[in-house]
Image 1 (cartoon, rainbow, N blue to C red):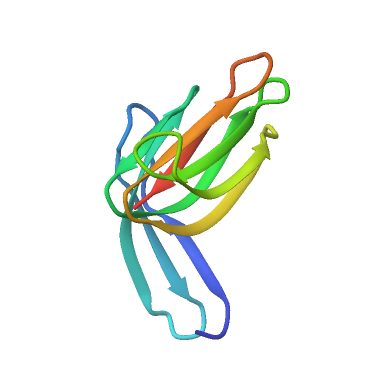
Image 2 (image 1 turned 135 degrees about the horizontal axis):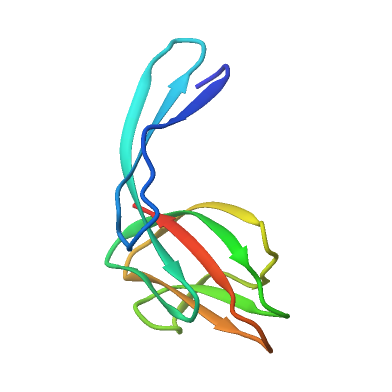
Amino acid sequence: MSGNVGIAFDGYKTAGTDAPFPTTIYDASSGDAVTWDSSYVRLTDSGAVKSGAGVLDRIAVSAAGTTITINIYDNTAGSGTLIFGPYVLVAGANLHFGAAFGTGCYITFSGTTGTPSLTAFYR
């Protein structure tokens, strides 16, 4: 696709996990729209993002703690095939992936102090 791309956020739910996050993407040149549902999970400690195949779209970091590092695995536990990491969290970071996983997506936290918080968007 060539040209400019615009994104419209049709809705956002802030409470709970696995809530729908409908998004419409428009090609500014043609006006064509594509809609899909993305889900999210908020983590403050190591945990599963999704079990089974999917795509990790992005991670938004709201709190970083002190020297907190994450690793992202294609697995239902904190081991196996490393997708990304190690990465030291930075508050306000917005990491874009588009990374496919087959077994599941699991994020581990390790570090010193504080309470990290991130939201992982997947489909």
